Length: 105
Length: 195
Image (cartoon, rainbow over all chains, first blue to last red):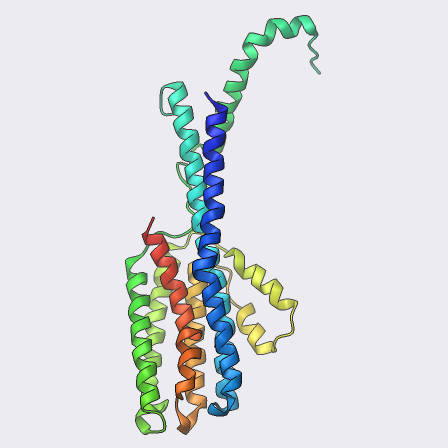
């Protein structure tokens, strides 16, 4: 059994995890949060179009939307973590089963 | 306590490699037994995907129609209660599906957001609405947030009275607001479908 080979496969899975999360932050979460920030400014600028209760409901909605983006990003992160853990399990399984000659894992 | 002197170590050396491999196998077996793969996120559900996508389309059409009909009876909240009631029913059905698929009992970001909001000054009712989100799977939390966002949209429409929904509200409703919440759910489903 080659520990270096297994270590490399584990590190590859971990590096992929970091890259995937950063890519999703850039392509999804940051643009969405930027859009919401623009809307909060727009509500303040166009306040004459809204009743006080209407403006408040719109602002509450933006707060929830921001939290929704964070919850979605958390889910995407969990999905990436799930993939990385399963890639590591596959690497360990392949190495161990190959070394002992039967399917232990 | 067992202490090996130099002579013992020499005689045991050939066995140490086997022992190490045995321990690795034992450890791996203990850690991984019954754990062929790990699941932290519910599997892709095409009904949640199509449900959110069609709700996004319907909401976009509705907002544009309300803006066009602003200031008239056709654009008033009273004439359009059916849209909001329909959305509530559709989201409740999707929440029921998400609850049936739930994997985690608690979404990690819910507690984090709760702590962050506790540290800043927010109106009590806003903080209350967010803070009372139940500890649940992230997908369930996201769909409940979406339903709550539509409740805000209903309140907004109602509070606008005779003015109706002005063109300036399109961005806050669809680029941010419920549009952002629906896109969040759709983005997650697309990511799951790609696996």
